[in-house]
Amino acid sequence: MKRKTRRRWMLAGRYAVIAFWVLFTLMPIYTAWVASLTKFENLGKSFLYPVDWAWENWVNIWTRVDMLGYLKSTFIYAICSALIAVILAIFAGYALSRFRFRGKKVYSSTLLVTQVLPQVVIVVPVFMLVNKLHLYDTYAGVILTIVATSMAFPTMLMRSFFDSVPRDLEQSAAIDGCNRVQTLFRVVLPITLPGIGTSFGLAFFSGWGQYLYPMVLTRSNALTPVTVGISRMIDNQTHWESVMTGTLISIVPAVLIYLLVQKSLIRGMASGAVK
Amino acid sequence: MPKRTLRQRHALRYAEPYIYLAPTIGLFVFILLIPLYNLFKYSLGDSNIVQGFKEWNNFDNFKYLANGRFLDSLKVTGIYVLFGVLGVVFFGTIVALALDKPIPGRGLFRCLVIIPWVVPQALAATMWRWVLNAQFGFLNQALMALGLIEENIGFLSKDTALATVIVVRIWQGTPFMIMSLLSALQTVPEDIHEAASLDGVNGLQRFFYITLPFIRPVLLTTTVIVTAWTVQIFDSVYILTSGGPARATQLVALEIYSKAFTQNDLGTACAIALVVLAIIMVLSVIKSKFDEEGGLL
Image 1 (tube, each protein chain N blue to C red):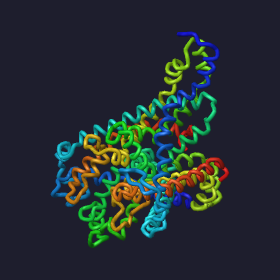
Image 2 (image 1 turned 120 degrees about the horizontal axis):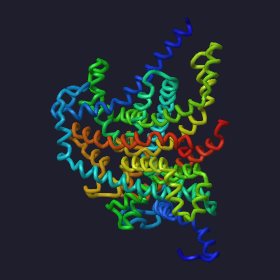
Image 3 (image 1 turned 45 degrees about the vertical axis):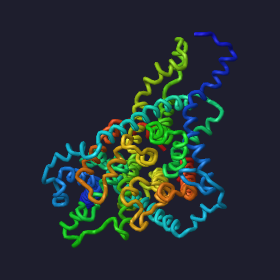
Image 4 (image 1 turned 90 degrees about the vertical axis):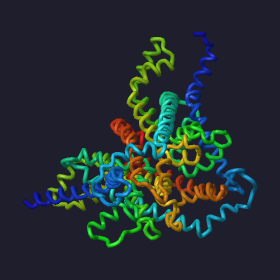
């Protein structure tokens, strides 16, 4: 009997912790949603639920600011950096998995350094370098920087996927007359598709959220991503309903991509790629 | 396909991995070699972002590191990192423990608590600015409606801003801790818990003597990772407060940015960046030590 009541208290306690944390976690998002459906003049009058149901905010945001332009440049940053990162990660991961060569240790540790290197530390010298290369205010400059700093994770993930592909498979392909590149593309890559998908998803995800690099490395409106564009809408007379609408619109793709890669991400974590 | 001589094939075989790695090695030069070299160079002289390195100035830039303004921002960073990380560890642990055993709705809750990790920092910051808004913000209104406060609180005013950005940091950082700990908790054998509960061990003892030793390696490694991330937070604090008011939230990361891009003092910015780099390197070494020793800790 005593154990039963204790168990009940334990359960209540666990629910209390979970309820508190879930409320805390969702508060900003829920609040943003309420604001996004409130007319400017009614902001702050009702905070628990939307009274106006002002869906026009979701329509007006596209004309109030260059939302489409922001989303377009964010997509370009995310897609291009993810594509390049994945292609580079396939080759680098393959080399690390299948070859023994001089400098492998140095290469691996350098790769790790790119992963831990703080953005704020290198953004200044990178800005100078990008300027010198005449890549300031171009997509290329930002994408190159994003790829270089986010390449380590996909590379290690691909390496661990390649490690799990039996070598016999490649040998039999070689006997059938495939050269190494053919083997890689026809035999190995199809097996590692989940790894490629996860790498792409994560790289996309990281490109989507970039703020500091595009802010420092670009100037023109056409190259402004959502993160920078939306946060610039905050001034003295902020139209919070628009800021919140824009924020929610910009979060959706990130969440979708995350949900897509979530399963294989956990697999990657289990296989030790994330450490 | 042209036939290659044996020697050519050998050379190719030797060069092959390097061919695959070449583009990424190029990127290392772009993101590491040249920037780090320049970081040192700029820090050693009078430099600005238009002309770059101008002239040697007797370590003048490093004198700022002993300046009261910088020491203040170092202190602000210290408080931010300390309480931010403590909060992440504390809440991460209790939420992970609460979600560990089967409980109705667990799948949904696990999904929900991950959300802050998925929201880009900059966008999380814009949402929080609205939540914390001194006039109309959700938090002020909710507290008012509950009768807990009588007048609006300026959550981002001089005395409160640092605490507020720490809370936002905890909001962002905890999901990663929860995820890591949930996977570590799966390694704790079920029967030990049962045996302990038969022996009349209470919940707290059970946590410290049974659960903690199992999850300790993961807890330590994750804590170091979270610490390293917290040291370099820029986006969210920059959007929330821009380091203000009156430098109350001027983290070292923000100091680098403002030195370089608003005060046009590239040299000092790079000197500060070297300090941050050193902190991160120390943390990386600690983490790799933890990784090596693994289960022993």
